[in-house]
Image (cartoon, rainbow, N blue to C red; front, top):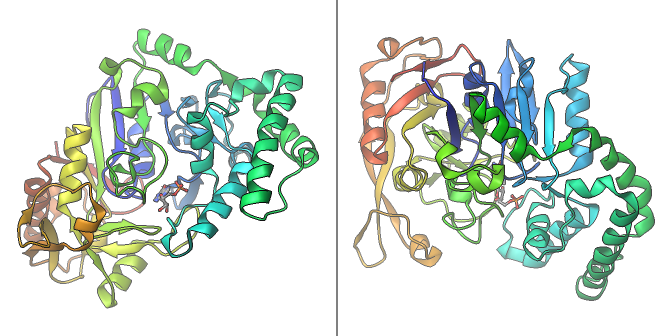
Amino acid sequence: MLDYTALSVVGCQWGDEGKGKITDFLAAQADVVVRYQGGPNAGHTVTIENETFKLHHLPCGILYQGKTCIIGNGMVLDAPILLSELANLEKRGITAENLFISDRAHLILPYHRRQDSLEEEKRGDQKIGTTLRGIGPAYQDKIARRGIRAGELRDLGRLIKRIAEVLKEKNELFQRYYGDEGITMQEIEEEYIPVACRLLPYITDTALLLANQLAKGAKVIFEGAQGAMLDIDYGTYPYVTSSGTLAGNICSGAGIPPGKVGTILGVGKAYSTRVGAGPFPTEIEGPTAELIRERGREFGTTTGRPRRIGWLDGVALRQACRLNGVQHLALTLFDVLSGVGKLQIATAYRGPDGSSIEHFPAELHILEKSTPVYREFTGWSEDISRAKSIKDLPQAALEYIRGVEETAGAHVSLLSVGPRRDQTFWRL
Ligand code: IMP
């Protein structure tokens, strides 16, 4: 067991690393679980006793009774989706009396989703492959200082005026530039606002709440969404999401000082996947990719899209560990590699001029002309999904773990060999 006061769980690839499952496993010890970036583009899957829960906004701590769960100011939230998440949980007897939403979190309005679709359509063959949940446009409006924040739901008269102002601009854009019919204020007033107002009881100053909890000695987990390679600055820009996905963003996204981020636990799959468009140097196709996709249930939680599959990209993982300051690495979906045959880990790329590239380049055109340099591993055929400790793993699996550590420059402290809580064990 890892001893911590604050623990930050961050994705080290292109998202979908199994952060939900790992956070759920770790949340048993925690008092507070906080989401600090992203929105309903995220899809955190947690399996408890053969029942699967898919969470988009809600921190995984919601699946335990009595944990304080926070939707931090760095998130963008879609009220109808969040309410349907809560309703689904309620049907299964899970209530959310300990949920708190930051009054500074930005709201995704119906025009953000429309804008996301129109922008994607306009991109033609340069599509990013967004989740079409309005994430990018909501963050654009935040930075452009015309966003609407959750706290504004407290004053309906003012809120309606503010939305009407923004909608005027949006409709000009939609109608004149995109040739779209636009959205009426009536639709927003009748269909969106009454729903959004149902969030009011949860809305508060979550940074203050968190500070008080930390002062009382509460154990806190910061649950990241997406992954380092989708980070707005260090990901494969512009094929990235619109938020900061690195541990550095926890402070501004949750409202805590840097010293409170605590221990950094990075999560990486034993291979790589990516949804949406953009460079993916170690991508593979054919029967091995199909086998991994089926075994790993590699279909998007949010969009259902089949995920692209690749060998473990050690260059990307190394960058993620360095940027996040990963102290412990959780290696997930390790059981999926049983019986795949020979395995590969990319340790570097060969650049267009023949040079060795050890660090993920900023320029995508260089990446596109580079090829991975692989280290090969023999693989293993034993089923490892019932392993309870490192001693239950075959020698070849141990060699693979050592290969991951040497490439990433981080210690593999936690292993996940299946979706359930009891298919997780420490290697501290
Ligand atoms: P957006 O976040 O919807 O704007 O999408 C931007 C890119 O990030 C697209 O390639 C998405 O597929 C990807 N993306 C966003 N959220 C996730 C996630 O939770 N897992 C994996 N990919 C994601």
